[in-house]
Length: 341
Image (cartoon, rainbow, N blue to C red):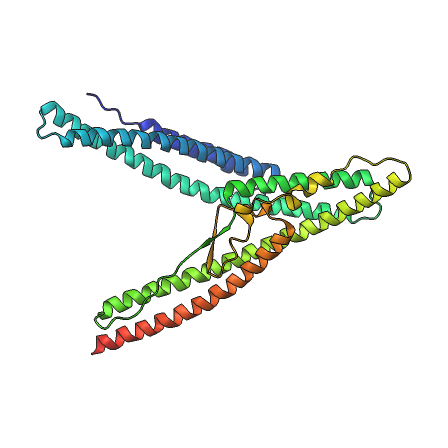
């Protein structure tokens, strides 16, 4: 039986890298703008290119994983036999080599995908910042007194389009959610050796560091939610002004213009899936930010509640982190004292 190593996958991975070089590096050198920030359309083009490369690598990985599973089943069948003839031993050795080679291919793809996912998140965050800045600019334009109602409606539509684009990016790169966590409760036992006590102290220190990182992430998320709430409030105010204007026109018998307020507000004031956005996160326990929840599905009132919840949990995490840090110091001291004995 002849075994063929799927080297095409490695070549495809290399081709993916070359494509990214062509997309990202060569244009920068050709334009002489290596240090200059790209325009938003170019940034979106790069984001889509990286996303496409990740999808291709993911498909390749799935294909190789299926091959490895098939190899393992064949290997298991051969190993279950009591005795193997010459050809069966040769087949088994070939399967083992091929399986190992494919596993290395998968490891290479995983490493490349991690790098690409990091790049995708950075590009996505940059795009979100760009869209936020454009939304802010459009809102400032709406505050001009001389703007016509037709222009006002057009600007509101542009704002909604930018918000939709931002939501799509957030959905792709993942945005934080809440997930309950539990911390290990550690104590010093009478028969613990100094090394065991130090290991417990190390674990406490790791938990302290983790809580501080999570507290920072929750603070950043609360700031993002506050920014989202401010944008929604301003959009609602402008839409309310248009609604009042339309009502005045109807009272005068002029007839109302085409309304867009229902579309603009559907994201913020529409029905909310209680299984995703109800009161479940608001439990009396420590929570961690997880990348699987779309906060845009929350109403404005729920955004306010979630923001306050995040702030409160951040404070609790910092208090708990301080406590773990003090406990770790005590453990280290006990370990040192036992070592001296």
